[in-house]
Image (cartoon, rainbow, N blue to C red):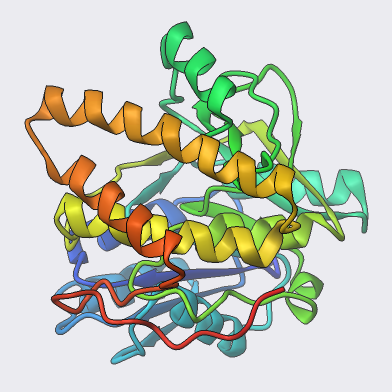
Length: 325
């Protein structure tokens, strides 16, 4: 591949125990119409069965690879680690179970050129956008609990839930990104980093980071750049632990990012009521009581001020955390 087919950008993939998904993701990166300047894989897996194949893919395409293993565990920590090992601009942060359309990278680079320095980040649109029924959208708007639907506002509501735009006719500004695929100018990381107080795969670390960035820069999503997220269930925890951890993270991030006045606190608890009712219905349909017991346990703990928990521990031990305003 010739020099003009390469960009100065960096791709960073934080991964753990998903070798086949990682292989497919890297295959889509080396097939881009414009190659990035470098790829950094930060791997906290116990083993690396796909590493030699990935090294061969990158060597054959001329893509510079930095494969870090073993790496510290935790998505925010792994992403920060990759940021410190790369130098390209812009920076693409991609999950290990994402497939990029061949021109995805090229289209996003074009948006950075088109907008100029006020643009801090660009996100691709999903190949399979969420299209929930109208009653679900109305419910989520009523309680302010966000989710993803066509032409959604892209705003972060007062309870710190994101109304994500699953698809749109044109480019849409966003107040936060969902992080399976997102990109930022390198200078963004001079001001913000991923919050390493969030443990494991760190639910909502992407919304937290991108929301902080949006206070300083413009963020957009473009329908011309496409990627597919496989939403792999590998290495995920039971629903009771997952809901409990997500709620602990949500309360922590609400305190960190939102004013702690009556309106914002009320929006948090009002949204929690809507989420509980939603989970009761979902738990009944799926015959999974953990969807309800997890959120009830989490609400009880957070109402008593417990704070973040360690999802890897059996009882959810408290996580040391910095003070938030």
